[in-house]
Length: 278
Image 1 (cartoon, rainbow, N blue to C red):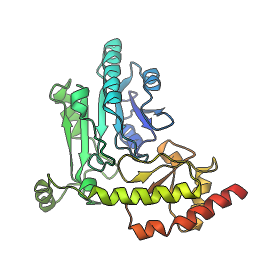
Image 2 (cartoon, rainbow, N blue to C red):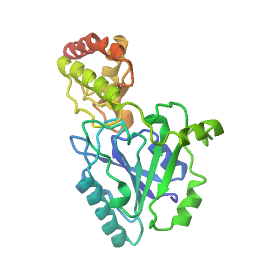
Image 3 (cartoon, one colour):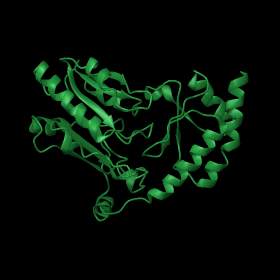
Image 4 (cartoon, rainbow, N blue to C red):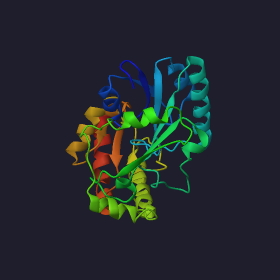
């Protein structure tokens, strides 16, 4: 990525993506997804230009829990291929998949390499093995991706906000032995269902997540920061959606004990009542 070149970020998106682009002097171009947080192919097509170098997707998504379908991924790949020929450049699809093994209701994560040739896949074992804080993952290039050597050279200097965090040799060996293991999805699914019922009973508008462990409901008032402060008064911590490019929403996490989630029910009711009378 050269200074001034563009990377399309599909909102709502993980907050650090814009930092990664800024690190190289690039421009993060935000494109909204549709009302159900699915890919809006027309909006993406309108945002593509001769400066576009990549599109980042995150599925299952943080913060929405949405999962993109194989059909939409394939259509996006076709769109990028056509646009690349039009502008005389390669437009890469970068698929960030740290939650790929945390999915519900028999959904499946589409194999990106089967649908998009110029693609890059990233994942992390810290989520599917429930190892928070352990920075162990992988990055894979499609075998037929354009400019493979240049990509590899660039990646040696691509860091996140903390710089390089090298995993201890012990944990690398442990993770290598756990490739057939994963967390118990049923636990997260049960917590999701409990949380969804709490929110529905209190009158919140939301889309049940298909994966990951987040909910991204609409806030009952336009000012998501203010509403999150109402929740904070009830000892509930929510992240305002505007930080993810989704104002008017809030991110909630259900990677908590079930009893903890259940105890939040009254607080959500009180906060929405306060919003209605403020």
